[in-house]
Length: 180
Ligand code: IMP
Ligand code: MG
Image 1 (spheres, helix red, strand yellow):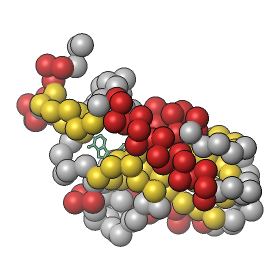
Image 2 (image 1 turned 180 degrees about the horizontal axis):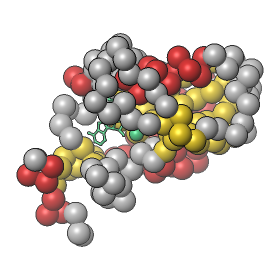
Image 3 (image 1 turned 180 degrees about the vertical axis):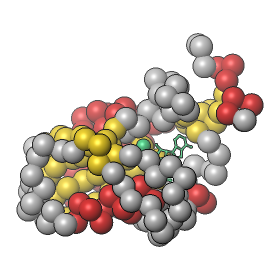
Image 4 (image 1 turned 90 degrees about the vertical axis):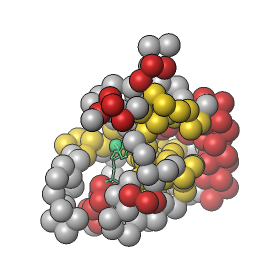
């Protein structure tokens, strides 16, 4: 495997990730029964998680995707999220579930939630595959999260470093020498 030489440890195997996603899907199935559910994946990081998760949500639902700009080096207070690709679905009166790969500082999602609330969804919740609570710069709680990860740079299962490693099927800690 091309990526083995670049990682220092595997945090979750593909099987463990699959179990985690299955559990999230089952919980979401219970919570959204009878509700008009719109699942919105934030590209590109959530792509793997999104397609796996919806297979475990045993409800009628619609899928859509957004691309948002990263906050770059903007400070916590000035950070504005820019929508580079918007959903095509109307959010009004829908139960909107945002699917994110990982929540780190919390800036992206806290800003995105502010913007999407203005569209009057019936509800607005977040599911993140991975949560890095030690990275938080603003308060941002996930309604559903798969696994808490340590404050290290992780790749795989959709998560990238410089657009690479998204196709790694396991969640791995990247060797610091790769990004230093
Ligand atoms: P936040 O706005 O700091 O919460 O981070 C949001 C985005 O940063 C995530 O959707 C990821 O794309 C990226 N990110 C944060 N931590 C990591 C990581 O450890 N590996 C890869 N991408 C990350
Ligand atoms: Mg992302």
